Image: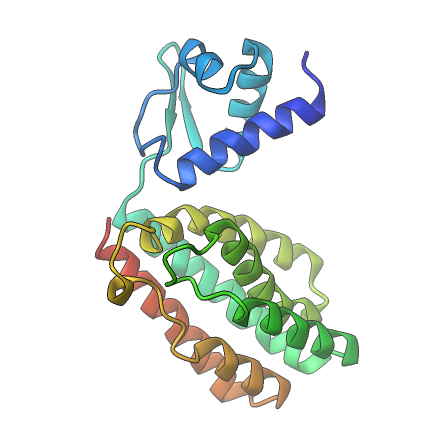
Length: 217
């Protein structure tokens, strides 16, 4: 058995190649090919693939092998619907229960997110994705709902693959993702405890994302 650290490193390398499209949806993953690609042994490759299957990045078929998980409009819509239901419930609870530490975390997360423009040519998408994820999570963490937040994180991570299809660096500036002030508007509505506006903004933000991703599937 390989060390947990090496397995995690290999898993992250494969995950990044899936996110960036270097390993395409539906592509068969052969251990011998991956050994050459990442210059590691078979054991960490196999363990990494098992972990990635838990996270829905790859699929196993008995007696047939392993493939990069496919993408589809149907799955995208279901993931966003689930994300929407969880986010709306968590945000409502967060605005009821959130304290000063929660508010400060939202402000800090928004500041970090606003420092990166995902439409720029030389943007670090991995860093933007990390900050984008943290901002949305910061809005919901005041909910004090551990189990529901765990489910939200699982669904969000599955959506991440689709978002990378959307924010591909190969598109022209005008076609890339532009914030349009949506995150700042959400932040202000949430901090002001304007429940109706905050929930509407979150819903519209999610729907816009889903519709834009659909055009690139």
